[in-house]
Amino acid sequence: MHLFYVPGITGETCTLSEEESKHAVRVLRLANGDAVQVIDGKGGFFNAVVSDNHPKRCVLALSGKIPAGKHPYNLHLAIGPTKNIDRMEWLVEKATEIGIDSISPVDCRYSERTVIKKERLEKIAVSAMKQSLKAWLPQVEEICPFHDFIAAHQNSGGQKFIAHCHDTPKENLQDVYIKGSDVLILIGPEGDFSEDEVALAVRAGFVPVSLGRSRLRTETAGLVAVMTVALGNA
Image (tube, rainbow, N blue to C red; front, top):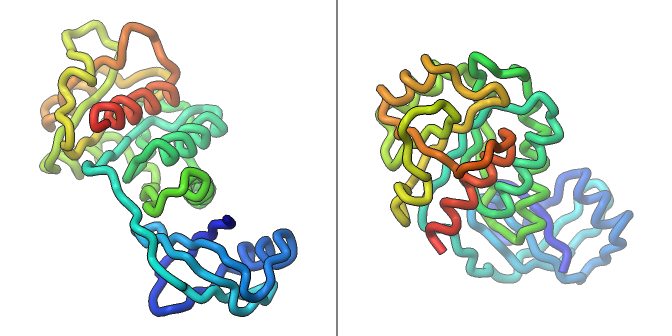
């Protein structure tokens, strides 16, 4: 069944965006009375029928809410954007499919990319949310300087980890993550975190962790972290 995204659903009807309306009417050729489903990105998952198949403002009549579960933890991934933006977009897509709540691009000392298009990443997250039949849309943040990010989360609750490649003592993420806990994980850029950045994060309560013996690309490390938490709650 066709699935559409409409943020901020209230009442018994909702209207698709112009882009979604065109796709629904011109491409999918949906007619009045056709059954569809719709999500709002905030946990709402609804059965619906097309009530006005206008190609610019297609209206759906909601016909019942579907139970949509949410994982019992909050996962926030902060990561240095990759030089090749395609790799960052791939990470957002796959992390959304697996299950994540927030994604924060962080500008680090060795970052090779300091600008991202938030709207583009949000669009990819929406598509991945629909693909994986989820009702919760991850929050994609604007890129933030590393020091500012640490300052903003110095007193945040839950578990906090920083994964890095420096030759210093650290435990495996899978061994120290506590099932059901909210968690914030820092992943460095392709040049890794600087020693000063690691020290700053540790002073702010972040625990250094390893993601295994292999040296991973940034986007792979991010996905491994997301998957480790997901499996830890399976």
